[in-house]
Image 1 (cartoon, each protein chain N blue to C red):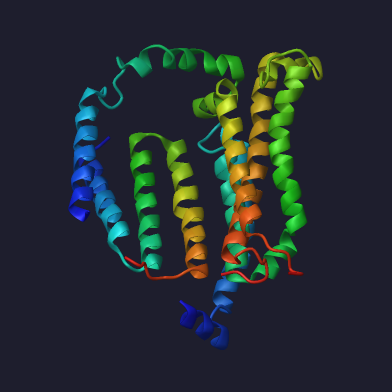
Image 2: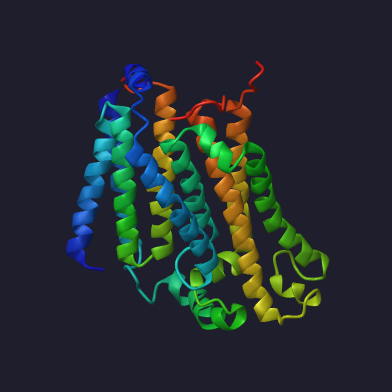
Length: 91
Length: 159
Length: 81
């Protein structure tokens, strides 16, 4: 069973490594992610939001829904832990 | 682990004067740094999430070095719950107010109708409001997770 | 991006990841996992993603290690397998 698991892990790892061959190089300006949307943010974000840190501008303004649901996920995790673990002192 | 716990209880291994004094000196500076990370997120790396985690870590450090009663003295369970819900409500409330005054949901420039600062300045300030909400929510949830997990829900004694 | 530093950190990351799943003592595994998180933080910072590195350092190396140790305190220290 253990050798089977190791074989499956190795196969998945080899497939993933093979998949990374199609990735663009690190910091490649011609890659798809860097050629359509990123230049727009870099050119207009400071004018439109007056926030010098681009990451904060994107996280808080352009991608506000992402940050909102990130907070909701954290909140749900806290509520789940409380509802499972919390016990009253009287019991 | 059980033996270690009993040994610690007998010989008061957790009561080290050096650790207590160091933590008492460190906690105000950690909290100040957390506030700095939240507020200065516009200009440097950081923001609501990281600053909230640092603020929560300061309370967890208090509970680790002293005991859970001391951390309740600084932030009781009720205050913690209020802050957590307030943080999540600030975020969604800002978005809802934007929608109510005529803009899109989470489009902070619509808030210009309420206080005329200029739409661009409102987008900057709206990000700040949202970051404060995220910081409060994350801080209280992290402390809540530590309290519940380390005392298995009884909230009497922790690590 | 300096490839010597990259190679060093990546080697240590792989060693820490293998150590985390092989150590039988769960408290030690939690600490090694904290080391892994901190090395990942160094890797992010070295690649220029400072915000991600900050999050990794605070959440991965700070809070999650404490939560693991709290959970180990309430369960067992030895792994069964």
